Length: 374
Image (cartoon, rainbow, N blue to C red; front, side, top):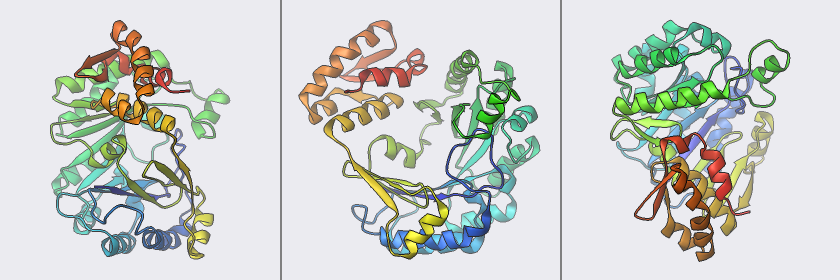
């Protein structure tokens, strides 16, 4: 069954590394929520059936939604879709937005999973990333959420930050595992064009991320979380048993999903859709009764490449039989190219399913690219 993603494109301030679509001008927030609800209506027949396995509020900062705005969106979702108590309903939240009042509101609304943007428990690292919260708020946000019964938590960490060490990463990991966090997403700091971080590096204001440090920290991360009982089920995601993210797993398995809001992406029947990444233009098109998206239908080669990319990133791996179902030619092509990586130990094979080794995960993008049909 499919999922729905809702993009809330507002933030209090810009993190230095972020290149997602967002605005720090909240003047359009009410109007945009109305437009999201109208898009839900316009797109109500997009998915096969109306039962959902997941709803995901991402951004931006969805925790900036007030009670009325959140209620309005849920009202629209309930009008067109069905779900039950097992449906995963996630809301991304910044630590500085998490209070007793907000947690009670989220629980009442039906949110049963919080994704908290911790990133680090180091004051220096938080300052480097221009995060809006401090260390105390990072610590308190978890305790407040758990105290209010929101125990299905996932927390984000960022590694490879200039000035960080293996010791500081170990401390960050321990802060989460000691608090019983069941799911952790960890991302290497990357420098994206047109971000504050890219500008700061260009002007010599800060150091660039060190690739060697990031590799060392990633290997340490895999080992530490593995020792703590976490399954490394996707390149950047670690979960205790039974706590894999339902919504994101559906992405990686190629399931259908609907994305609403500016810049949101959708996928169904081998076709990708993406909404316009401009708040005012999005609102205008919705007001005119238009779905504000473009689309691209994937060729067989595109489908093969997509499967290689997502399969290699996950513990589910790449199944040769699924490749053969697309085209026998793809199967022979893949088997010919993958041989060198199995010989080098970067990839393992069992029952015709190929998975990256820990060492291979360091080069996941490069290996996938080498296996692409071009």
